[in-house]
Length: 319
Image (cartoon, rainbow, N blue to C red; front, side, top):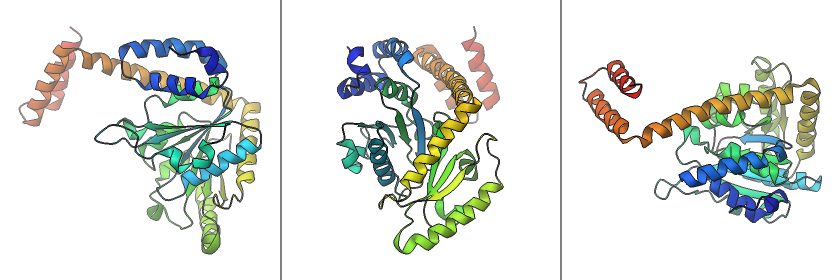
């Protein structure tokens, strides 16, 4: 049983147990999770939610660790929800974020939770949104969500954060970086990391190129995305990034956009939950699952057209 009083006081053990319960697929845990979320909801929503993505090797872990430590120096507390690819054998988390962010994980003002993606769309953990609410209720005022890499998961994460950061390497060209144009359109800021040593001039050139490219893309009129460079390992320009995020929070709060964006995200979340719950209900019905399997087999063998099979399934469903 979760002790809510301890959770609201920032007890790490209670927070970890709460997230474990949220992630559980057991029906009993699902009901307890909903009850818990309803109770802690008035204590959530007071953080700045930051999404961070970038191709493997861009230095996400180093950036998050040193930026997190910088935030703590400024008097904040930081929760990191790192979405890991799941092990195909055990289904467990395989990246081991606490070993990648050793200094941050040992800080009393930080909480790091690797979350296995469990095969859900784009690698985004299904329960990440609920985990954000729990971290906020526990008193963390900066929530950082790190994604697996660049892909469908970025669209999912962008729809659950206030500020979306894309990290780039100091070389030019989308092809070299594996960055999709659509992801750049989601970015509130692009950070060229590893701007140090021999890569410094390349980083400056990449920053200039992406500054020009961003001018041609469609973005929200409330905020003009900025392209910056930094060296996470040398801790250079972390203060500039911090000030930029604060400026975003102040300007969008004053205009009302900050709240409007969160309400729109809640609406999208509701729609996805409805779809998810309907799917879960359908899967639990043995008659429907058997019929679906039969129809899939007939489609695969070219006995039935997909449209005919789908209509037959729906007719059975709505009987």
